[in-house]
Length: 153
Image 1 (cartoon, rainbow, N blue to C red):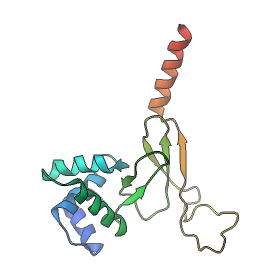
Image 2: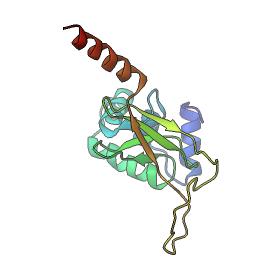
Image 3: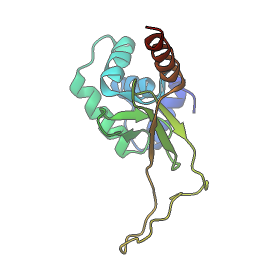
């Protein structure tokens, strides 16, 4: 799906929701340039589209869009919740320990739940959520540059 307003309207309607300017602005902000945005970044982006919009209205619409399956919320440990428009698959994430950049990672097996636990304890499992942690290429470069400077002194 692109972030074209008509496509967003269609997606909202197909999910059985009423199309509102606020909802369009919030969904557009999630679908916008940056995936894995936190709510503050979505508030800022949505306000750029509408002019004024309360923080509570953004949170309310995010909740509705998550419940409708149009948006996915992830919450890496120690970080605020983040929202993405990639839904309907069981992909995972890599999070940079330094800057927090988050990147999608496809399932190794390509079908949900991607992983099988050693004991399901009677649950019918349909999804697995994995977060890989490390340093993104930019932070690796910064770290290596800093370490090289420290060795010189």
